[in-house]
Amino acid sequence: MTTTFPSQTQNIRIDAFRPKSGGRHPIVLALHGSGGFAHIQYDEFAQMLADRGFAVFVPHYFEATGTNWASPQEIRDYHRRWLSVISEAIDFATRQDFADPSSIGIVGFSLGAYLGLGVAATQPRIRAVVDYYGGMPDEVIPEMQHCPAVLILHGDQDPTVPVAEAYKLESLLKSHRVPHEMKIYQGAGHGFRGLDMLDAAQRTYFFLKQHLHDSQNFPASEAV
Image (cartoon, rainbow, N blue to C red; front, side):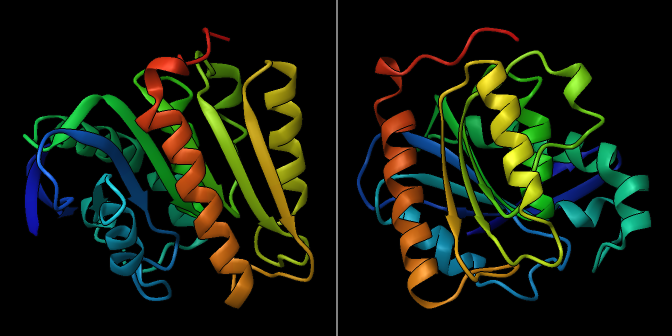
């Protein structure tokens, strides 16, 4: 289902994937990277999670800035606007009758991972973030008030976002004693293929299940 939510003077599209079973389900926001929807089948990924009991939402946050593919300059210029839109998308998700507003996670890909971690750094309502070949924005680190559990997935041959970003994030999480897991895929570049993608998807599911489905047993980390 595709609908919209208001953001300033605009309406932003958002794709919603509802589990087949009734009741309220943990929320997962899936955030695309700098290529928009061109390179990854986000619908298939979102449907996979919905089939496993998550209420999944995919916001078209580039619509807020008229972006199709984000250049480095556009990322610098627009990232604050995108962070605001993503926060509004979470607000929208929490109002849906099939979504559990007390259990929210984010899965971000590349730029989407940076933005997801940026949102989570200031919002205690986020309980888990899965970082696919992204990292923590440098400008957000001094503003960090909170950090949920994080799963880091990165290729050691990534030419776009160096694997050093994964290790930098790991060091930050360790210094704040934040629960986290990390998997570095040997020989993988920017994006996973074949068995690496299957493994990453499985890790994503179990990580979200642990920290969202069982969220009462895994409280969010204290302010940092």
